[in-house]
Length: 247
Image (cartoon, rainbow, N blue to C red; front, side):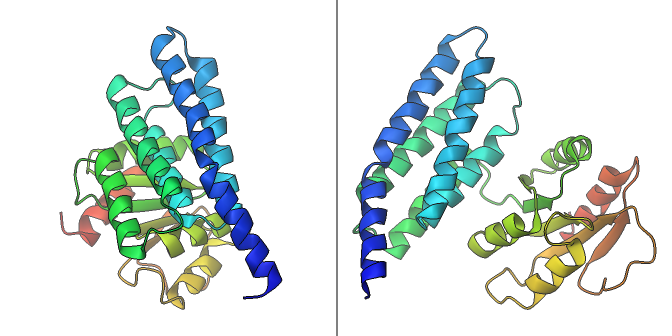
């Protein structure tokens, strides 16, 4: 191990050991959200702290925590302006698991890490057999419609804003379906699909759907379906989902 690696390992350990302080701040905000009649300001601050924690754990290659926070963000997106007490209780439980991980960071093995991650998933989502769907693209109104349609199908929806973020999540998490925009930021949808197909670390069984308003697009062989964006997009996606998974 060279000096550069040794120095990084030391910084990583110091950061992991200090995670409890960041978790304390987030838990204090949760208490304020529970107590305040109009907690909108605290919710904004809470989301900012969650996002900041995810960014810093990513810098230090603490993928377990980064992925866990992705799950938290996905879970909390189900409620945009208010969080009910049951949801907040689940978030607190997850924060405690992250605290345990930070304390055991030096000794925890890969099997224990996987078990802890599954525990976090089961804490947030009671149904263990939910299909996981990743949506890549910045179309807020359509995303809300898709989220509503897929929630009725008991699917777990995750969102990302660009192709690089999508790749990062696909490499570290298992998804059953990817829905991507053709004009995806940084990596266009067709290029993203090609990169996925040649990467053996990404779920080989995952279905892929391309959303586009363009005509005569080439390089579509990697996709299981190509849908035109219109007022019925969420309905067509629902139909494809039912077809893919034989529901």
